[in-house]
Image 1: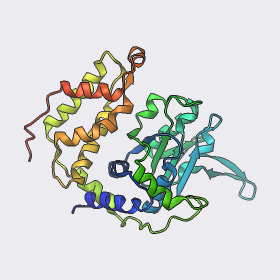
Image 2: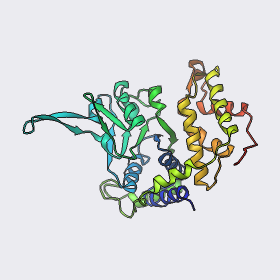
Image 3: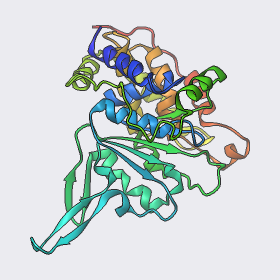
Image 4: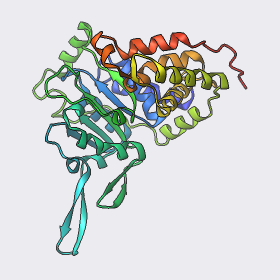
Length: 320
């Protein structure tokens, strides 16, 4: 078993002790960690997003920070501020929750555009600039943001530039009845899963994420697959039902995730099926429907599948 497959196995086994019925979500988190990207979770409140983030932080051996999205949240509430130290006669940074290794931005679309924009540099560059001074964030900085459905009261659509910073969008749905029974049995005591320390979780072996990233970097990608993804991106930019197609960052994200998917399955090369498996989670939130398509009740996933069907799937992978 290679490192990427081992990491995926450990995450599923360890987080499976505290979370139930989330195999697809955990697999997506494994891909995002190896691909060094951030994750957007969409779903109704109460599905376990905070518990998931706290458990993942413990698994990664880092500090966990939680930011509650509200309409009056200010950028400084996330990044921190400089305060004057009378003894030292200088300003010192009072860091905000963004300086933790794993950050849950809960209900991100309840914050306004100005506050959302404060996340852009942190998510893209792993740095924060305050008062013309730049601070480095922890290595492996990882953002999990939860988003309420757009038909909820008091939500703001996320900025296109903000959505593009998320490597993957994963949808959390209500659990099956058998899964919900398991949740009730484990967390029906006072306080549920948040007032007690999460026990029984073993931290990931040191260096496993880095070695998994090396596994993914060694995966071979045929030129025909690059052409395949670039063709999908090009068609999306010209589609009459889309006002915004896939950006080059989005196309890169598809390839990064496909590499990781191949590595997790212990293959030395990417196949078209790897791209087909990861692309819906990478592309769907990056496409923007026209107003006419919205009125017709169309969905970006539906549009993506239509685009994908127009591109010939490469068969000759020219495996080195």
